[in-house]
Every structure is written in structure tokens, then in C-alpha cells.
Image 1 (cartoon, helix red, strand yellow):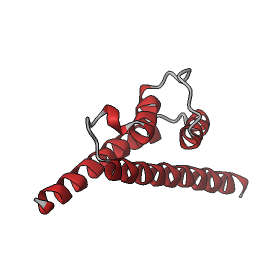
Image 2: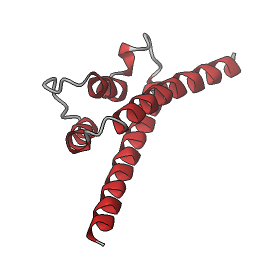
Image 3: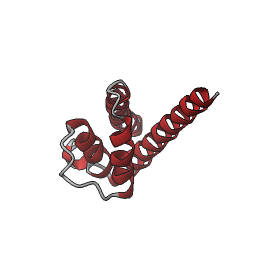
Image 4: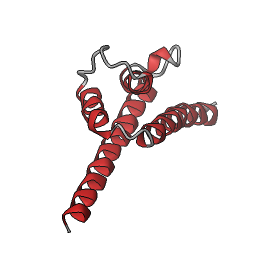
Length: 110
């Protein structure tokens, strides 16, 4: 029974990560970086409002802060792990975008 529970834990967390990565890849290709970065920062701060009309941004917010909307009776440990994994993914995405912007500015200046 313990192996089944560990497998379920692994599957639930990775399902969220895969879904989030798919959304981030799609957002990366939309060339709306100037409005994307502040929106993700608001999500990370827990201050995201519903005025943002991007479905992908709202989905990322739900994945991070409300995984119980996707998995009924979610184990608190799974919910906590999903939160930290999603937060790490979003922070890494912002770091990557910021580094790309700096590289672009440096190339443009030289």
C-alpha cells in the first residue's frame, strides 16, 4: 500500500509540473514578456487579481495556490509539495526571462 501511495504522490506532483511547464513554454513563445513578468511576480506574491484576462496566467495561479480545485481530497503533503515545486518553476522562469532580456540588451549595446 505504501508503494501505491508514493506512486500517487509522485504522479500528482509531476502532473502539475508538466501542466505548468506546458503553459510556461506557450507563454514564452507569445512575446508578451513585458506584461508577463509582472503577472507572474504577482502570482508568486499571492496578490494576483482576476483582472488579468490571460487564461494561462489564471491557470498558473490556480495550480500554485489552489491545487485542490484539480484534485479532490488532496493530501496536505502533496499540496505543500506542489506549492513549492510550482513556486520554484515560476521563479526559475522569471530568472531565465530576466537573463534573456539582459543578454539582449548587452548585445544591442555592443
